[in-house]
Structure formats: structure tokens, C-alpha cells
Amino acid sequence: MRVPTLLAAYAKGLYPAEGKWWAPAERMVSFPENAYVSKTVWRLMQTRAYRVSFDEDFAAVIRACAPGQDVVESFTALHEAGHAHSVEVRDRSGRLAGGLYGVSVGRAFFTEKMFSRERDAANVGFVTLSCHLQHWGYAVNDGKRMSGQLSQLGFMLVPRFAFNGLLSKAAFEPGREGSWAVDETLDAARWNPKVPGTGRVAPGTQVRSGTFTLSS
Image (tube, rainbow, N blue to C red):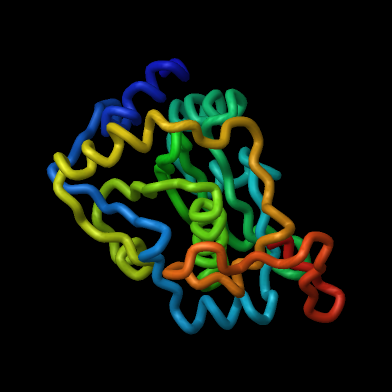
């Protein structure tokens, strides 16, 4: 599938899967201010158990999520065009412990798939991403269909008409195109989703635990 076709489809509430276009009657969506962070995930973030990055290794993340080759090719093209992004979560040894990838259209983000090789690694990445999306002015994060993991992260079901109403504005507002990077002035471990603007630290501040530095 060509990049313009995919972007136009996402903006209208459609997504590809199994060779078809899908638009479920209900969508799992997350609003940054409603993100839920479990005590376990907060503890992992506060102890700097993982290093989180954006767009450092899209190929490794999408391979770990194990979609079909046609999906890899389509989303790699989106990534190269600056519209698909990866979140890498690495342990202290530098090993890829988890992550996720998704698509940005305007000020709407569409989470495609997540994976964890260590408990809650992907959730740490998701919270870090959500912190950034809120600071960047994103309105909604779409998770498509209901799943237990998404429910635990604060996603909720909304009717298709309500979701499309959100997209009719958010998808056509200017978002962040090109390669993404973790904002070094944001510390997601200090972020309160219900209080926009929290998590900001002074420029140049390094958040450390021993000799291990977290990039968010």
C-alpha cells in the first residue's frame, strides 16, 4: 500500500489488517490525560530500570512485533516518510526489552502493536510516549480493538461515530512529522497525566540511577 493511501485511510478511521480495511463499530482509544500507570510501571520508571528512545531502531521493533512481510514493507515506507514511529525500551545491558510502533496523522496517534520480552517493558515505553504526546498537543491515541493490555493502560471503548468526530479535527491539525526523539527536558517518571505540563525538567538535567541514564 502506498503512503498517501494509508494516511488518507487512517484520517478517515480505517486501518488495514488481513488484507482488508477495517472500521469497527467501537474503537479503543486513549486520551493523554486519562493514561493509567500501574504501581509496578511507576516503580520501574522511577528506578530507571529501562532506557526509552524513539525511532532509533524501527526495523528491530517492527520485526519483534512479528507482522507479515507486506505490513513490514508498508509501515517501513511510512516510517521513512516520517509518519510511522517506534518506541524502543532497552534494559541496562542495552538489550531490546520491549517496544511499540504506530502511525502519526495530524495530532492523532495510532498504536499498531506492542511487545515485551521483560515484564511491563512495553508499558514503560507507552507511558513515555503518552507523556510526549500530551506535551506535543496530541488529542487521541487509537488502539483499534479491545484488549486486556490496552484496558490496563487507560484505553476505553468509544462508538465509531464519536471516534470519527475526533479524527475529523485531530487528523487534520499539524502534528510532528519526520524522525522523533525523546525530549531530554521531559521526565515521564515525574509526569502526572491529569496535570498537563508536569514532567518537565530543566534543560541539561540528567536523570540518573547509578551509571545508567534514562533519556526521558
